[in-house]
Image (cartoon, rainbow, N blue to C red; front, side):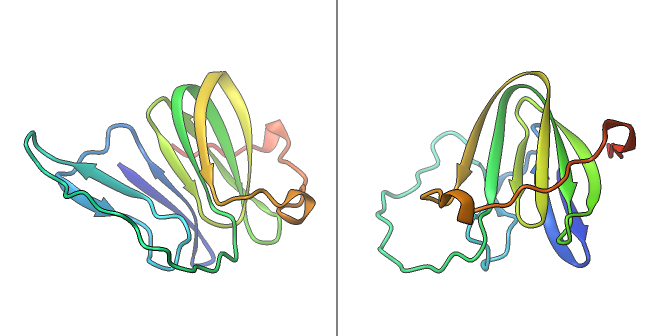
Length: 143
């Protein structure tokens, strides 16, 4: 259960649902992304050799965020590159979303605990701009 949301041939978000399962290692994002989204499922006894990651200079042009929903329910509203509203999705406990491009906003539907992962450090006003949100009577919910 991996959902890829695309607008004008660019990925806006990947949603990895709690029910997703596939043996082995699966990465869903292209190598060009500054955030990589992957899933791993191994049987008991599998050994992943110890390792250290090398210092590698990377250039980050766009902040990408990952949200991990630990409990509760969250509506995510997705926007295109010209601030246009696209659609909304509900995220439940166990779901993970990678917000790859475009814009986004949220409404907490049920008390929520979530983890956010993104590049840092936060650059304040340079890092993002506020856009007009969708009116509640115009929300388009996708399954």
